Image 1: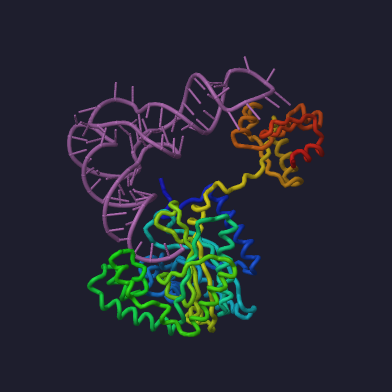
Image 2: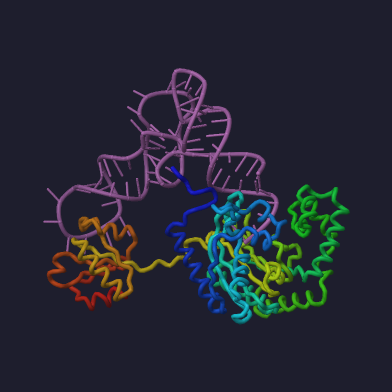
Length: 413
RNA sequence: GCAGUUGUCGCCAAGUGGUUAAGGCACCGGUUUGUGGUACCGGUAUUCGUGGGUUCAAGUCCCAUCAGCUGCCCCA
């Protein structure tokens, strides 16, 4: 027996319907806001991620699926979507097509992690990127599009957390101050934090250890280090959210894991036990320097990504509307197919029939068991008379000796 | 990467070293000809995640390995 590789999974019928509902909703919501879909390769030059995601990040340090191809090129299965989109933006000179460039993507991502509920090695994201504008109003557009998608999927229990990391200057000053503070209490904090304060001092603030949290209450706060620009931008975003009636919480410990963020970062979390230890459904922020870091002209940008597996867990399968299904009971499978084809084409109906020429009773039982809405009786006697029988299984109404036109009318009711 | 836990038919499971591995659900077929999911009968694991080992004897004990679940780290 060969099993699916660790951390991967097959998406089967009910799940795949749910996924397709999510994707269709995203297509619609994003199109309404003028975002176009972009499809980029699933693997890229390893250097792209080293530079984009940041050499210090956990993704690069221990989670990349990297391999050499037959020509000894180092390639990596994409661990996230933004890097590829930015690469494509630069390579295809998209900045000349009219800024801002508004793109969205969907598809599998890969990270070599320990699988858990809501966390897989091959997982799927839907993401959105708006490139070429530094206006906080486009941050608002992006956040709104994310909220709109989740609202359209009828999700509740969601909380939006936002924070501003400020621009590069403010952030550098803050990190220096924070690091000084942390080094002074180095002996008192947990081992994880000792490591974090070197690699990613912002992360310390998010430590789960209560003892550490108490110490960090005295830490310098990021908002004390915002310069005028950083402060103004964040104010516009906050008042914009209020105007849109989008509730939010400012969480000064929200720093996010990737190196490339500036200014506003945000996450949407859901408190639901179906997600296990993973509560973040959607996360994103502004990355104003990434594009020039990757060799493009300076272009500020903002985007988010959301996890499809987590979203699917939250929505559950009960939201799926059952499609109306029709079953043809016939003693001749080829005649049944002919009729099915006609009804599918002319009425756009979901029509099935039996392929085994089973007995009448068997076919009716099958139609009931599989939850069909209506059956058409189309046996030898009907065919000779040129008529059809119809039974609505939910309401128990039965119609006999119908001509084709009348059958069609009733089928659509 | 670390820690804990689990792995018997498609699903839920009984089994605690000794003949041919319970049971339920689901699935398939039948109960003789065209109208209801019921009922009854029958079928479906040469095998207990995989590979080794201990033993006269292993699903049951040991080791390894793979996978699932949970927490940590981190993230979508």
